Image (cartoon, rainbow, N blue to C red):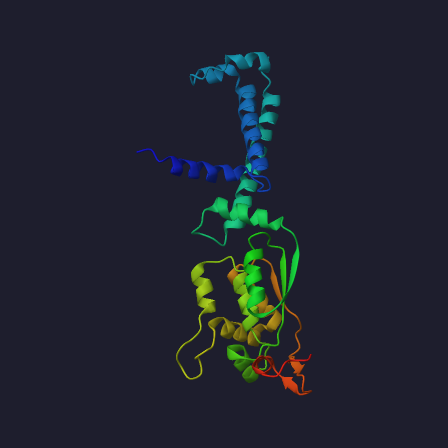
Length: 273
């Protein structure tokens, strides 16, 4: 039975290769021009009678070719070869540059999404915790020109423990934002978001937090984030608001100072500032 929906889906997928901005049409046109010049030059060099021996009816070329001109034919032939090679090389580069990180998705989808997102607006988002990562998941569908500036005052959970034991910036909120902007396989995202449920020292820790902590010890915090971004194929950039190990301090309505983000959230007295 004829499947109309399947045919329509295939045609739409093929049609995406011709969308503006993909860098496909221009090099395809160069390739076709090279192909035309190649056969034209071959006809000029050999003459129409050579094609007749191959049962190809090209006598109509005689009016255009005129007298046999080997020199002119060689020039046109070489021009066609150059355009053919240039078209093939650039077509291959346009496709392979966008598909090098992916092997299980359709190349046209990857190429279209990448070129489309590169033309999106430039956005800077500042925040931390769940709110910023949720926002980034929506923004990455419209642009890859995103810079997320993340707060580094978290002192609870896995981030707080790593911060206290290793003296590093809390990686939790930054990890969440990196995962939100990730354009990688679901398994990789699940891996770096995994939280250990057993073990006295590992329980409660996120694998992604431990990974960032290890990379920080090797490369430094900024370089660790850059390498982590490469692993996850992040759309955009994620930066800490500061590289200093800072703490959040609040004053409640009774004039008491409360130190630490966790303690502030647990305060039963309204916060003044």
